[in-house]
Image 1 (spheres, rainbow, N blue to C red):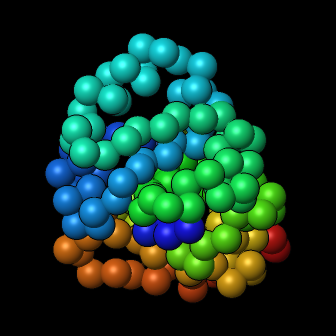
Image 2 (image 1 turned 180 degrees about the vertical axis):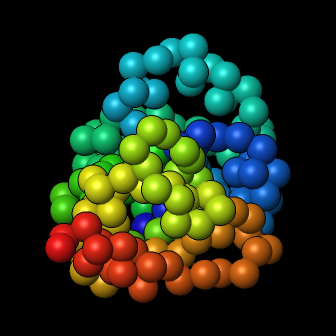
Image 3 (image 1 turned 180 degrees about the horizontal axis):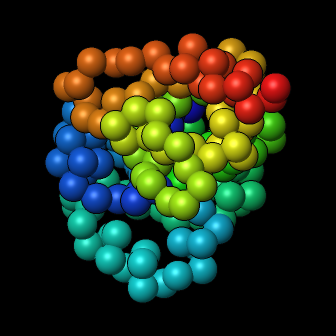
Length: 166
């Protein structure tokens, strides 16, 4: 199953994804793995309206999305997986989904979060989950658009994680 891109972006579908990533990576399916969006029909309709007609949008809760990927339900299609948080990515990895790289495209400011990069704010839970993802041998790269320089942020995550563990 060709998972072309796994992206953490708390906005999920928006201009950077549709105009930037989808045009560059040429996928057949965008799978949104989100318990919140899976329960929000209005948000699903709005996201579907922004999608190119040749790309299928699938919205599943995290458990169902993970099991469908693991079972190979999308094995014949090139896929982009979108989640809103590192905890979702870690869940997918812990439950059998196999990928080697995660793009952090947008974890925006909220109270209690510290800025690590221009588009990356993380709290203690985010850092712990990102660190666990790193420890599984998965690359974590920060990049807003596909044409931007790919920045491996594993060292930054490890450094910040060690600070909070003291």
